[in-house]
Image (tube, rainbow, N blue to C red; front, side, top):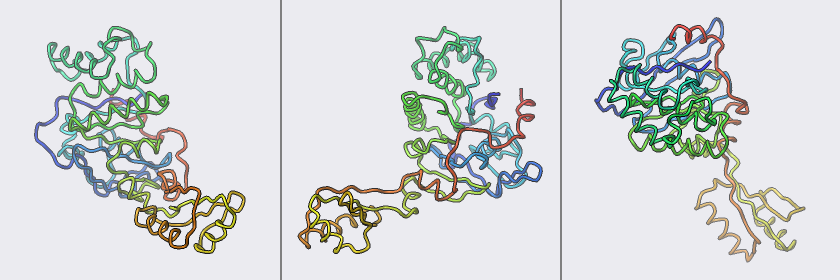
Length: 340
């Protein structure tokens, strides 16, 4: 069942430097603790990515921050509104796109947008104006009068996000927005996210694609076992993981042996006449390595620099692969039903 939208009214015009903040968020279902003291601080106008294995609590975090589910403990504010004491203020300032496109397949693209405008009570003239603008912005104006059921996965996702933007939200929650999309559609969606942030919107992104977080996010947090186990920029997270090295390859076996003697700690690959020299992957370390080769009169055929990627970070921090998309909890279904 698609996650319902919680976007009512129009956002406050007051600028808020911190778009989302949370301190000590806790949530349990029965004897299962889903969130165990989560802290967040997300500046306005940025992209924040929340990573974690299935069941880590990503979707639950989004549900709490978007007022779909109440936290058991802790405090959170979104766009300057307290999630617990001012839920209507939060809902007026946000848009939510769940893991599955929440479209009415019997309606056309334009009709879906107008339906959302009616729900937001924008007025007929403003609603039509907003619909035309979004159809153009998301490059679906040429299919405005075609039913959503005929759309490809990428087009459905674009329309889904366009519906989220009808109320011009300050903060958008995108819960695994590119799941199931082909690579071309995924990159189109990345461009869409970048354009939203360029316009001042804050994007809270959960994703199972680590490249997606690497490409889009200003900051990334890794959630595991209900706790934030690491947070920083993609480069900061990668720098915490050992494994950076320079691979030196040689054509002449004599040169290879001389290099092995010059770098006694390097890992050898005798079959390919290659050495793996550990380092931090930085320019200073690389410059020092090349200087040592030059001083020793050793010539390498080529070299390449290898640094840990977010996959390495994810595995090191969580001990899990990313797995497939799925709900973090089994309980929220009845909550979704009550919001219809």
